[in-house]
Image: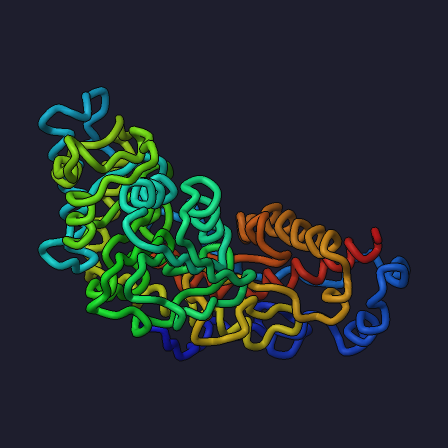
Length: 441
């Protein structure tokens, strides 16, 4: 797994982007920082100046869409990509089934899966794919859930409160911290997230998983697939959605099943009722038609065509290796700004565990850290509003169930130049927002 990234130089020196601040990174003067250090208590910050003291950067990102999902379309996308969509056709007819099957085959090729791994299209995005796997596969063995993210916590709730698994172990940490994956037990089924979209934490590799395991490994890879290497010898079930790394549309999930997972379907039927939307069995056996282009319910053939176009783009630029290189370059551009920032830091403090795909940043400025959570959220929302007003960055606020801060997507459909231009705008918006929130307080 390519987790080491060497920071690279920005396209433009920040001193030219932010006149008046040497190097472009010290958005506030030393006098300003001294003032902020003196006004940590909320009651003391009402006297802060309200007049703007910050010049706007000159260079803007060409595309301000840095959302962590749905994410920006691949470079060069246009509506023409949908010209051959099988619209107004039943998804059961030959041509639409062939288009769906092509998406499955291209996915398998791009992710370099073993020949005996199967791919299917599942409704309800990654959530639907994960819950289909959990409802249809679990119950044969004890289950371990490793969770540290909003979505990993959802699988914990499913296992504990919905399926009510009797033999369940939960290894759970707060956002920014990876659980102790060394507690993994090869005799048990394991559920984990490849890349925590809302927490900025990913797994540091696959060495902790035994190749000769007895239980299944079920991996939520919704924001990791197509951005990191996957060791298929350690994965039995993997899920993701089109709306993340490939820039596809929402509501469609992908379910990858290894031979051991198919065997589980053929030999185990859980005791609990399985909703039809999560049903991977047919006649007591694995429903193999799902891996040949059949679907559980009606998919959007427009969305199918859009994802297929993204797969063709990925293959054209060099496949998975090229996608990973784009992600590495994107993170390097953002990381160079983070390393010199005087107010932002990574939510994850352990570099090896730090996601380079969905980058979660929180506040390092002591004056802001001293504020209550509600005021920090107000600051984050103000930063977002300022950047959106200037069309410099869209949708970069942290997930509502995480901690205050910002979250920036560095996946392969983003352009490095745009991330290089983003840093000075983050500095400008922070300075403006801090003044506004402080004076209001």
